[in-house]
Image (cartoon, rainbow, N blue to C red):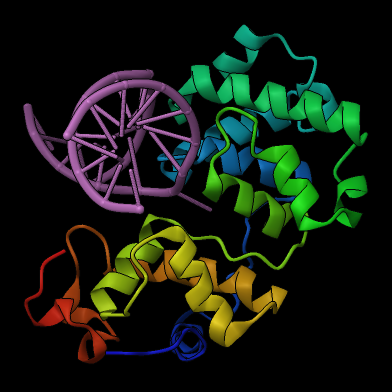
Length: 218
DNA sequence: AACCAGGAGAGAG
DNA sequence: CTCTCTCATGGT
């Protein structure tokens, strides 16, 4: 099958509508969630986020000066707490000292922002894209494990890595921020329902358009 | 009780 | 560039 990203968007939109992604009250909370959810289920992340919120620490300027061992306690349920605590503190310090806060970053170019964020240990391509798209409102498509698996199962050509997947989306959706934000949420929702490791192909609304449903393996 | 989850980094080939 | 290993908790 050779569905383009715009058509896939319409298919998934008809199933889930507006997913309201990224979940989070503030830009600071979105950034925290992006780091905490690395290879971790969102239910575990929510526990960490509410603990931080309950202590009144859901601001980067607070997290920049937090005691590391205290932060580790607060985010314990999200796993990989040593690396994540270090990353959260470092990123918070960097943003606060260089920009003062998130709002001042929104006027910067993508190139400058990437050069600023990328060197921080613990923030890879996907986390950086999530921050750019959902916290800074930059027209960047977030590619995760679900995205690559869905593209592969649908038989989309030339989408074997993050860079190619972003090109695939850019080709037919362009820089429509609203659609880029929602498409990622649509893919996550769809993948959770039908396209996990143990696929629910029998009930899948896209089974007629998916190679995997007819016997193909990952 | 193994397997997986909204990754990243380091090393090897 | 692609593989493989490690980091770690919590739900099924």
